[in-house]
Image (tube, rainbow, N blue to C red; front, side):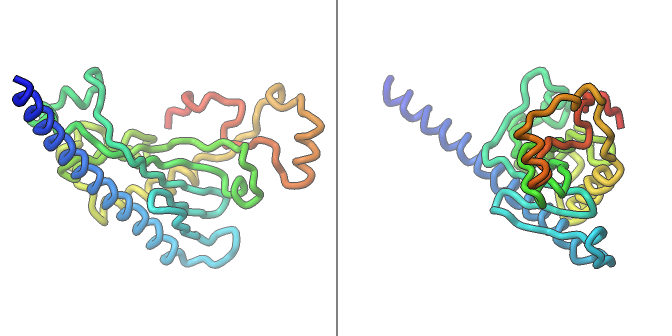
Length: 222
C-alpha cells in the first residue's frame, strides 16, 4: 500500500512540476518579448529632447523600466505560477474546460509611475497597476487591465504572445500612461503636512505624489 502511495505522489510531482516548469519558461520568454518591444520603442523614438526621449532600462532578469516624458512603465515578472480560482470567469470557458492544465499561468505586471518618482528618489510616491499579462503552457495569453492594455479572457485560447503581440501591449501601455494625466489632489487631502515632509520636499521633492492621489482609482472607467 505504501509503495503505491509513494509511486502516486512522485507521479503527481512529475506531472505538476513539468507543467509549472513549462509555464515558467513560457513566462520568461514572454517577459523577454515585452522587454524587447520596450527596448525597440526606445531605439525608434525620433525625439532626443530630454522631455520627449524614451529610455529603456533592464533592472534585473525579472524587472525592466521604460521612461518617456513624465511617465515610467515598470514591467515585473512574478517567478511563481498561479491558477485561477474556481469562481473566475476564465474557468468557465470551453478553452479551459477542454484542458484544465491551461488554467495554470505565469504573470507579468505592468505598473505606471511618474518618472520624477525615480529621478528624485521619491520612494513614497504611488504607482498603479494598469495590466496583468497571464501566460499559460501553450503560450496563449490574455491581459486583465485598462482599456488600451486589456485583452479580455474570452480570447485566451486564440491570442499567442509573440513579437507583434508584445509590441502591441507595450504601445497600448504607453498610450494609456500618456493619457492618464496627473490630477490635482483634493485640497482636504493635503492641507495638513508634517515639518519633516516639508523639509524633505525642499531638499528633494519627497511629498507623496501620484496621478490620482486622493481619488479613487477604481472610479476611473477608461
